[in-house]
Image 1 (cartoon, helix red, strand yellow):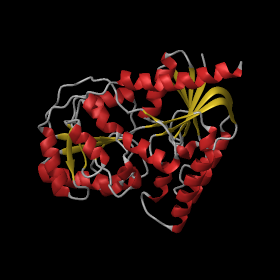
Image 2 (tube, one colour):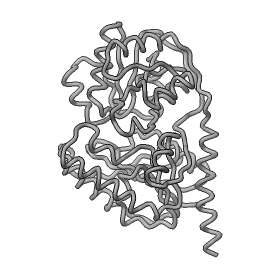
Image 3 (cartoon, helix red, strand yellow):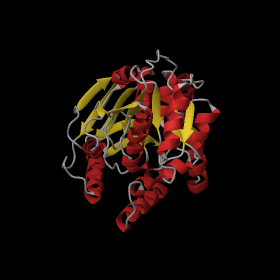
Image 4 (cartoon, one colour):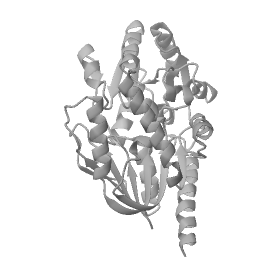
Amino acid sequence: MASICLVVTNGCAPDPRVERHARWLAEEGHAVTIFAWDRKHDLDEETIRDGYTILRKRIGRKSSHSSVKIVRYKKKFLKSLQGQFDLLIHNDSDSIGTSNIRAAHKILDLHDVAHAWPVMQKTSILRRFLSSRMEKQLRSSMNSYDGFFTSSPGLAAYFEQEFSIHSSVILNVRNSNPLPRPKMKRIGFFGRIRDHDAMVLLVESCKQIGFNPIFAGDGPSVNRLIERYPDIDYRGQFDEKKLSELMTEIDVMYAMYNPEKENIRLGALPVKMFDAAAFGRPTVTTAGVPMGDFCIEHRLGTVASFGNADSVADAIKDAYELDVATKQTEEDERTKFMSAVESILGTRKEASH
């Protein structure tokens, strides 16, 4: 069996897609390591879970929020990684700067448009420069990969049209495990808390209709959100076990994202929408973009106009009355994923003889 590492530039606390792939690989008998970046220096340096190991590197000052410093520290993190592996999987193109990991084969999982991230919160000359540099780095690195994954049909089409990248689409789904609904008018946001405006929209919408929001996860907007709403129900970071516990407390999942952001326009699908459906929870997501279209087509919840608290409030009330069930299965996605991995490893091994 192969020695495989996955690289991600967050703390993996959690990263459901990356950890799901690691679990699949470990269950096939592979030795699997995830390298993650503990930017805030507050996570365990080593975690062993479901047959794989997460090794977290503490690079940079935990108090630094400067964009320039974060880019510099991320570069140091990627260069600090070392090892000899049969397969290296980079997760999103902001992780491709590794130079001291040796691997016979490489896969790039483009489950988002990473070069759009620098200009998500605000636009400046520096942020546009960083975005442009990330895009150029992706273009110059494409030929070094043996295969590509994407997380939605929309993103697959974008990367094929703009970068001539042919990818296997692996949806972020899990098997159905429906839980009884508490019917207590609670709505959850469980994931990376990045978009402050989206979080404010949830709180203000809930005030109109008497719902209570529950937040869980890490992200750059956590402190700002707590400062604005000191009494909000914030549960901190969570793992797979805690996610199941959190799901028992809510009736609806919140997955609203700004439709003006490039990755949202191009087809990103929120993991939390699939997680919610698996546990029998409907989702409220953004109208007029692929995630909203997917939500309606597969009857996973309701949609609302981003920035419109009245629209979001109405969508929450409508979702509260829905029963949902996911039709996608983890086994289908696992089969596609493992087929691609085994093809790359097997083909390359045969060619080397």
